[in-house]
Image 1 (cartoon, helix red, strand yellow):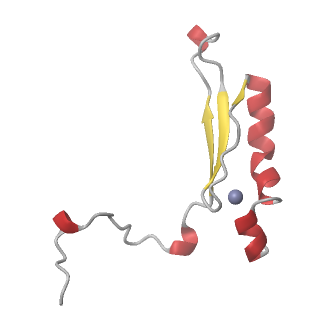
Image 2 (cartoon, rainbow, N blue to C red; image 1 turned 135 degrees about the vertical axis):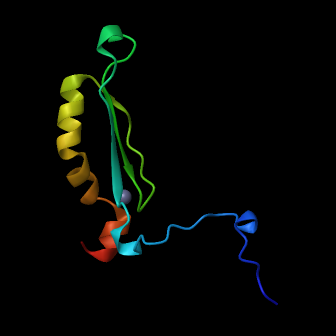
Image 3 (tube, rainbow, N blue to C red; image 1 turned 45 degrees about the vertical axis):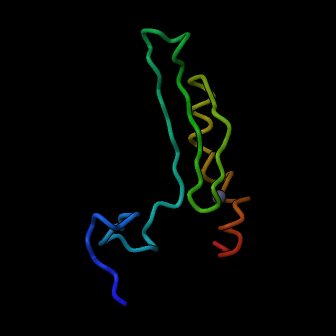
Length: 88
Ligand SMILES: [Zn+2]
């Protein structure tokens, strides 16, 4: 048996040239908001961990976002189960 290599039958596209070890480990999502409509669109930030699937609560407000973006990665890295396994 042989599998066709047609892209039409490939359910999930691969990412050639992207070494597994270089993949994004975590994402820090920041939305600085719409200052012309600040009450409805304040700055927001959220931390997404690509290793363990952790998704933080959404932080809102410029001061909270600034503090969050400065510490979210280190804070999560200290508790991330995936990173604990690798002892990084
Ligand atoms: Zn994690």
